[in-house]
View 1 (cartoon, rainbow, N blue to C red):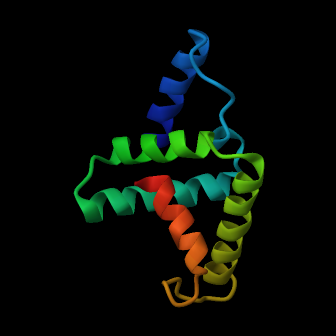
View 2 (view 1 turned 30 degrees about the horizontal axis):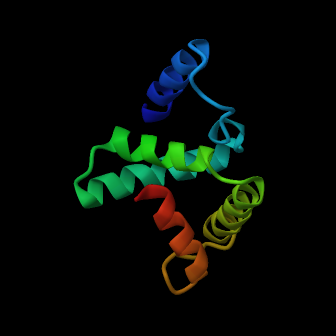
Length: 108
C-alpha cells in the first residue's frame, strides 16, 4: 500500500534526522484513508504515478499550519458524514468551493 511505503520512507528520513514532525501521521485514520483514496483516484484520472501523487499530498499536508490542518479534518469529516451517514453523493454541488480549491492545492 502507498501509505506503508511512504511511512517507511518517512521513518528512514526521521532516523537520519532529515524531517520535521509529520502532520500527516497524526491525522485520524478515517481521514488518512480518505486522503489515500483521493490521491489514488486523482493519479488514475490524471495518469500520474500513484506514489508520487501521495508523496506530494503528504509533503503539502506536513507544511500546513495547525488551523489549516484542523480545517482539512473538519471539512473531510463533514463530507464523510454526508456520504456514509446521510447517503449523499459528494460532488462539486454540495462541497464548499473554497474547500475544493484547498484540496486541489494539496494534490497538485
